[in-house]
Image 1 (cartoon, rainbow, N blue to C red):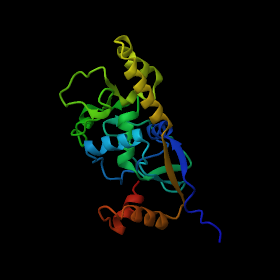
Image 2: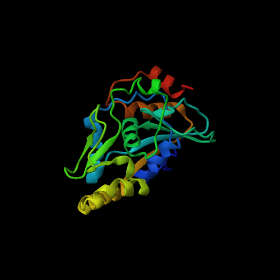
Image 3: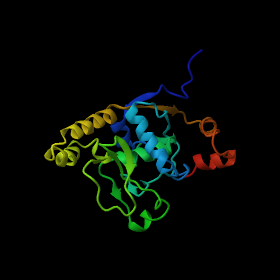
Length: 234
C-alpha cells in the first residue's frame, strides 16, 4: 500500500536554525494557540534538558498553500520579523510553549515592542535567562535586579560569537578561564542540539483538524467547532 502523503518524514534541525526560523517567521505561530503560560520552572527545566542532551519532543507543523491563518507578530514582549508573502506557509500546530521559551532565551537580538504591549499579557514573565557558570544551573534575574555577576552567562549570547566573546571577557581578565571554557562548552551543546520537526503536508482541512484534535487530546478539551474556527481564523 502506498504511503499517505498526509504526513511527511520528520526533519531534523539544529537549534540555531529553529530559532532563526521562528524569528524570521519561516515557521509562523497561529493565533489560535493559547497564550504563553509556562511557569519559570518549566522554562528552566526545558533548557536543562537541552544541556543534558535529553529529548524535548518533536514539533508539529502544517504546510499549506491554500489556507492563510492569522499569526502572532511577537512572542512574549519580543517582536518577530515581518512575515514574507510566500506561496506556501508553515504554521506551528504543536510546540508553542517550547518555541516561545527557546526564542525568548536564545535569540540574540530581540526587538522590544511598544511599552504598552510589553506590560499586557506577559508582564509576569521574566524573559532573560542566564546560566550560572559556577553553580552550573539556569536561573532568572530578580524582578528588581539591575546588575548581574560576571559568572551569569546570558543565554542570548550562545549563538552569537561576538556577544559570547564579550560576555566572557571579564572572566578571562579575572583569570577564570575555567568558567570561560565551561561557557564555550555550553554554547557548543546548544548549537549542536537537534530538534525533530514533523510537517503535515495537506490541504485537507478536516484531516488537519483531526490531527490537531488528537495532539491536544491530552490537555484541555477543545470542541470541534472551536477547532474549525481556530484553523480557519484569518
